[in-house]
Image (cartoon, rainbow, N blue to C red; front, top):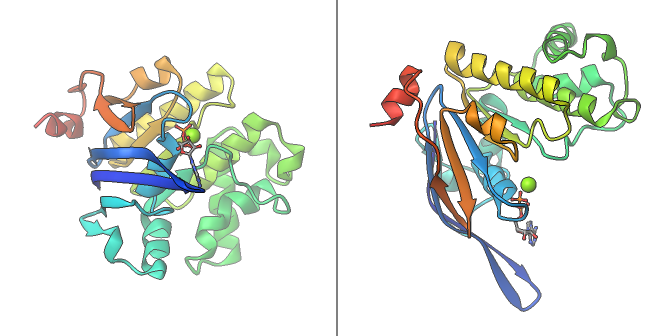
Length: 237
Ligand code: ADP
Ligand code: MG
């Protein structure tokens, strides 16, 4: 589903260039649930943005379903993102003037579905994340945890092949965080969706098939690979 090969990323701040990613390689297969831990500022969001085709590496390759992102036009990248990737942003990125239902339905607007079909699927997605009674609320009328749930609904509404979730349970109480993780587990096990979760929570990481950690710009596998799913077993090579 996703292959990152020796990805480097450096930012130029005035005269100095800061290396954030120093050769990250990661392969995520269909149905795999992979967690990424690591201290704040170590480059987790930078990595997720590259994997989600929202940013480009300074060097190295990002392949999505075998296609090299470097060879796609901006339009193709947007299409790939919309068709295959559900992204949960760390800071939610909800549109402030749109209701929860309209925010959740946004990815479908670009797919030419009817207004009614979009609303139906947006409502179903919100119901699944426990937001059934908040369809018409604006983001400013929602708590942080509720906004996060809308962000998860928006990521799932288009039935993506891969979910990239950047600290998706960071603003949630443990019980709701648990429910979101259960949803991710179900998606990966039942529908073969690949899920990459950035988290600071050891409990969240423990529920993934593969645990990784970012250290000094490099990603290392830290946890045992669970052999409980076919995909994880295949990943064990
Ligand atoms: P994490 O998600 O692990 O907390 P980030 O990927 O957000 O870390 O950031 C990694 C490092 O890259 C930080 O030191 C941050 O200051 C720096 N950084 C992120 N985005 C930019 C940018 N657009 N310009 C310059 N530096 C950046
Ligand atoms: Mg981050």
